Length: 296
Length: 266
Image (cartoon, rainbow over all chains, first blue to last red; front, side, top):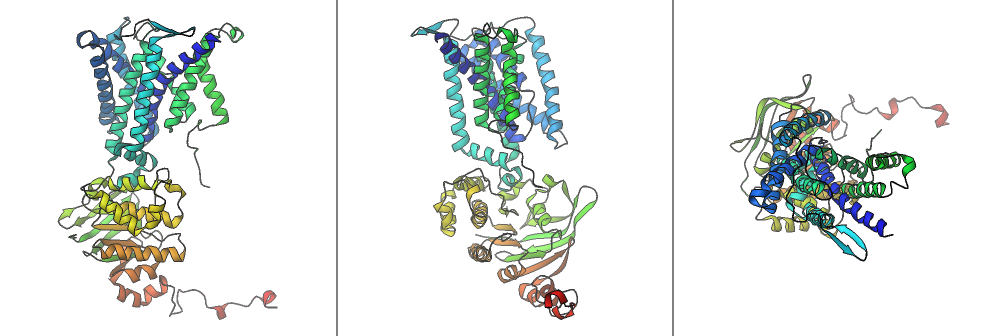
């Protein structure tokens, strides 16, 4: 039982980090209808900047710098690449983001080399023991920070002018522009927020028990894709639920791999995708996605 | 509210390379008046409004000639938000309210493009006075409103931008006659408060009653224009848009011309 609770808490914590990534992914999709395959490289940018600067300026300022840089890089991708594309075909733009991802990741991997970078987080490898349950501090921090950020985001999405503009534009961009909403600003904002959230996610993907930021961190970030997709690409709620499902699945599959031995080794890596496929079989638009309606 | 003239001169609009939707259309909306544009489906009425509001790009359309000016300001070539900021606001065809947003949020979205946001609260009050039903349902999702209520919301939303010229695209489309009357009265009330209106309507009787001047568009060009009184009296308009036939040509078949169906006649 203790093990189960530990695994669940761990899963929720990792899941909330995936939710941060998936949320950014969904915001960009809602605002621009572009599937952003460069998301993992935004995350890597944020993590790299935090790793490079934390020695000189301290952890929190470095994290802020990482968030800012990832936000700016996101905005630059939108401004310099996607907006210049003389096509309104979202499929083409999505493929363009794959190119952007390759460029950014290649450069970062060249800089990181074979190093494993430490992000200078204050929690280290300490854990908290409560009623026989042992949880690493980093996992608790991840859960708290992600909860705060996600709540702040959802409140802003619901109540601020930015949120109203964003939701109006997501629902009907042409009419939103007839109301005087500047679509270019909405999409820049979406990329910035997505970048900043990804940078925070980078921190929590690389803290204990993970050794640190290395060239493969962007691969870990890919697990947020099934999270966004199984939740429904255009739903913020879906991103949250999807993130948690993927986190829990992964954590439980890792924890009980001895019992699940008949399914073979490395099940935890595949499990999120298996869950995604199963959910999509039942609900092709994801759990909370808008079903594509076609008028005949 | 000082209002200027919205003037369109020799406007030519194409969709893609081959479809010419408007050819050399000239039209004026005098300050403080209601101007109606009539025409059948495909005559280019909606295209005209898209050109004014700058949303042709969403439909791969381009302005290939002519000018659109409001007062001494050039509107053609501006992005939609810039047109709104100059006081020219459109209520699109089919209402296009944000169904997943609440009534309040729809109104808020409408105010986002206003030139100044200082009077937003007062504007909102006036709109809720004009449409009390919106006040009653202000927390509901807009998608749950009835067709007529959605049209009121669409008009209210546009009014949040404090327009000097309101462009209305078929506001009574698909509404029950009572509701259409009600929308008509509202348009008159809005106009009385000093907003010029460019009204596109298929309901010619209603449009001609509200408008001072009217234009008839046919396959992309102005076929007729004049004061509403002149147009209401014109045979052409009466026959084709008001459904009152005084000539035999072109109108609906006369009853007695039709062969009797013996089986039914007994």
